[in-house]
Amino acid sequence: MLFEKVLIKNHTTFKIGGYVKYFAQPESIEDIIYIVKLAKDKDLKIIPITNGSDIIFPDYEINAIVIKLDKMKGIDIIDEDVVEIMAGEGLAKIAIYLENLGLSGFEYLYGIPGKIGGSVCKNAGAYGIEIKDLLLKAFVVSWDGELLELKNEELNLRYRESDLLKYGILYKAQFKLKKDNPDIIRKRRLEFSERRKRTQPYGVQTAGCMFKNPNNMSAGKLIESVGLKGYRVGDVIISEKHANFFINLGDGKAEDVLKLMEIARKRVYEEYGIMLEEEVVVIR
Image (cartoon, rainbow, N blue to C red; front, side, top):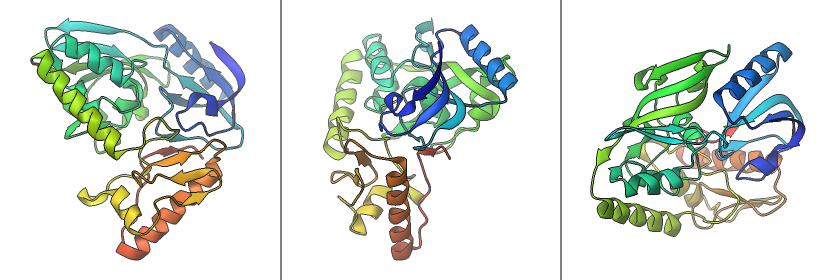
């Protein structure tokens, strides 16, 4: 469950990052509590991840415990339209599972390369639906190792952010969905999936969207408009399909990513007076 000196790039979708002092993959709430208390005793920073998307780790070794929650599995039907889902369940699997039960909501999120833990933390969203529209409660292990049950409004869910990490580590979340015909839900899911494949890079090493969309504008369109599609630093390139995605061509470094981000931010600011804000979490 707890490992020393682990190469973190092997646990992220971007495949970028150096070593971390400790790495853990808990399989139970008790495991999480143990790791949280151990980190407190050792005065170590805790970095929770689920799928390892939407995050950039540095190239150097960091003195922290990374907790990857991908082994926290389970989906329980609480009521006819209420479900509880463990942090390590992936959005694609959840969407199909609930679709077959005639429960609508997660088909909008199908294709986002994330799991429940990170999706609640970052209020993941697509096609007009966000996690905050579905979430009832979050079940959390606090930074002191206590169990908390938090209501949606306590998390202050907003555009690609929340206050979740002020409380601790999410291990389970409860959602209220809508009953619908499984065939209609499936049709929506497939339409969203096809649209995503047409407009975003697929099957490559990325961290997802790099910047938030400012004031209902598209960060990707802004970056494209200043001529940066296909721009490359080291082994990291700005996608030709969608300029808000950076692709690791194989041996990308965090240093390359940060340089590209700064170039994009500077060019867009010079052209439009808009300062792009990071959507990815950059561990510094």
